[in-house]
Image (cartoon, rainbow, N blue to C red; front, side, top):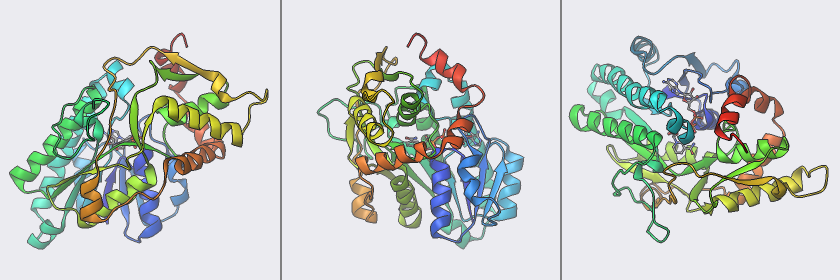
Length: 353
Ligand code: NAD
C-alpha cells in the first residue's frame, strides 16, 4: 500500500490512475478537495477496492496518523500543495499553510509512524517529495539548464513555499533519518489540469469565444513535460532512487508561451474549427506581465536519465494533441471544474481583458 496526498488534483489524479493501471498495490489518497481538485478525475476508480479516497487535510495530524496506522503504507508520495503562481501573488497565505505548515505536520505524522516500524521496514520506507523547477529561480536566455546542484533561489510566493517544504524534507532526512527522495519537475501539461493553468485555460477560452491571454511579450520560456511522463519518472525514482537524493525531471522541450499558444490554436483549428472559419489566433490578446515573472526555466534531467534509465515517451506536439482532444471530449469534467468561484477569480485575474 502507498499513501498519496493531493491525489484529486491534476498530477496526483493522473498518478493514481497510472499507478493502478500498472500495479495491484493499493493507494490511500488524501485530498482536502480544494478548488483545483476534481473527484470526477477519479470516477473511473469508483468501486475499485484498491483505491481508498479520504477527504481530509494533510495538516490534520490525528487523521493522517490514523490512516498510517490503519493502512501501513510502505511509501508516501506528497503531491498536495497550493500550486498556482498567480494565486500565490494575490494571496500567499494558503500557500504558507498547505505547502509549508501542511508539509511540516505531515512530516511529523509520518516520522512518528516511521519510527515505530521495524528496522527493515524503516529502511524500505520512502517519502517522495514532489517538487518543481520553480524553486531554482529564473534562468538567463543562454544559461545552461538547471541541474540538481543549482541553489534554491525562488522568486514567487509559490516557489518559495515549495522550496521551504523541500528544505523541511531534507532536514527530516538529515536529522531523523527519514528516507526521502525529492523530484523537481518542469511544467506539466495533460488531461485533468484545472483550467486556470496556461494550456487548459487557452483551450477553454478559445472554445468559449474569450480572449487567449498572453503575459507581456509572450517570450517567456518554459520546459514542458507530458504528465504521464512525470508519473513514470516518479515511479522510477520511487523504485530505485538513492535515498536523500534530488532528481530533476524534464524532457528538454523548451517553448515560448507564444509557441504554445500557436500550437494550441493550430490543433483547435484542425479538431474543432471556429464557426466563422477564422483561426483561433484571432483571439490572442497580450496582457500586462505578472510581477516578478521568471523569464525562463529549463531542466537538466541527465541524472535521472543516466542513473535510473528514465526517458520521456511523449513528445510535446503529440502530448498537446492528446490534451486538446481530452478537453474536447470531456465537457462534463470542464463544467464541473469551472463551477463555484471560477468565473469570479478569472474576472479578477484578467480584469479589462
Ligand atoms: P493541483 O493544484 O492541481 O493539485 C493539488 C491538490 O492538492 C489538489 O487536489 C488540492 O485539493 C490538494 N491539496 C492542497 N492542499 C492540501 C492540503 N492541505 N491537504 C490535502 N490536500 C491538499 O496541483 P498539481 O499541478 O497537480 O501539482 C501537484 C504537485 O506537483 C504540487 O506539489 C506541485 O508543486 C508539483 N508540481 C507541479 C507542476 C505542474 O506543472 N503542475 C510541476 C512540478 C511540480
